[in-house]
Image 1: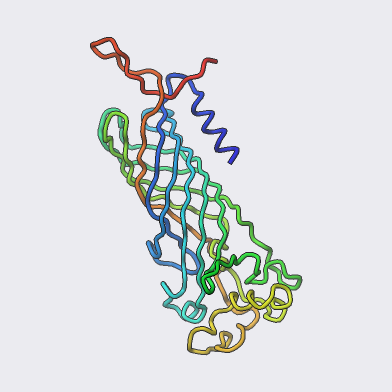
Image 2: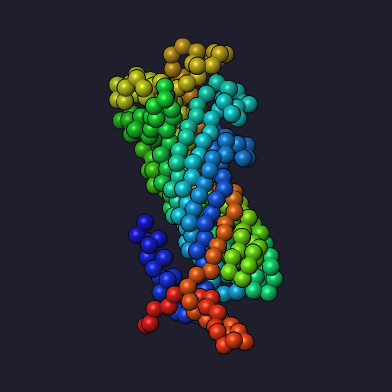
Length: 287
């Protein structure tokens, strides 16, 4: 949070020849991982604010704060044997701080629309949970895959992670001071626990002793669906070490929506016939 505040102050104190835009983002958020491999499944709302600094006519630095929801579950996308017998699900809110560079194909000072691409870095917070009898139960403290247990080689995952945002869209000049971008932004993550699913099932007795019956209940939910199979029984718990997720692939999330920006502040601009000067740029601070 401190780094984002610093960036906002830095942009606001640049010279009078800079260009700044405040932005708002609205759209949907989606997740791809162990509990969903289909695009645009279980879309949740996403909203955000941004401060944009034009480095040149075609390159912009964009600092943003985005808040969104994510959801996935085998019952929505299950088609393979594992998904049909696993029966897991999750929800999470996402709070993301990002800094990206945005490049337009055309100069929007000369044309009213342009494709654009972007990429950068993001820091985000998540916390997967399920609803049980109307109560929100967070999954990380339950060690559903034995994270942190003495005899299980899986470390507890962090709820604060880095991601690589990238994507593109098309931007339009709605007026001299207002631009609208329609975009899709992917997030390449370095964690496979966005959905609390990654590796294999722990020992049921050890999990029960360390974390209690609710951890055992939410770690293995295959007993709630018919079709008993070796390793995934209808009564009891999955075999220790049975596949629960795929640790070889990391999770993803992505945003799809519109980004509306408004030019702010004073600075340089063209002089009209009346002698008045139109101010375009960011507020300037004497150095």
